[in-house]
Image 1 (cartoon, rainbow, N blue to C red):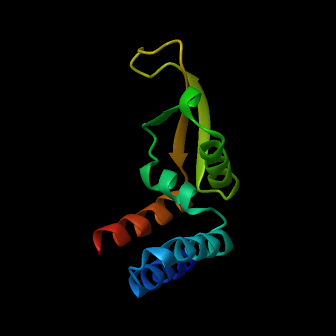
Image 2: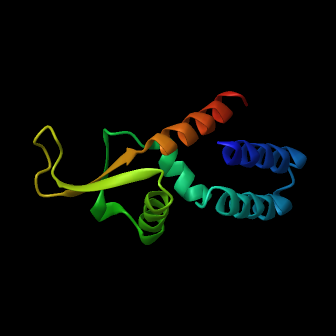
Length: 121
């Protein structure tokens, strides 16, 4: 979890350093690089991790390649497991395939830290 705190500090430092739109993309790219180096996943992947729960079902049909890659990276890094299911547990949408996204213990710990960062704005 030390890596999560390093990432959080980097995000806070980079985004608070300037509000200049010309530098914002550069700073976000830097934070994304730090996320990849320290946690092994991109900011896009972290966005999925924050929303992940055993009750998360993503419609595979509506996912683009970036989403799929982000979820695969979370799974490869050990933050989540996934399960393909046909239809939802309540019996609806039987014709659609879903990807169930389940955080691991490591994923829950990272999720907790990220959510704490969000609430400490």
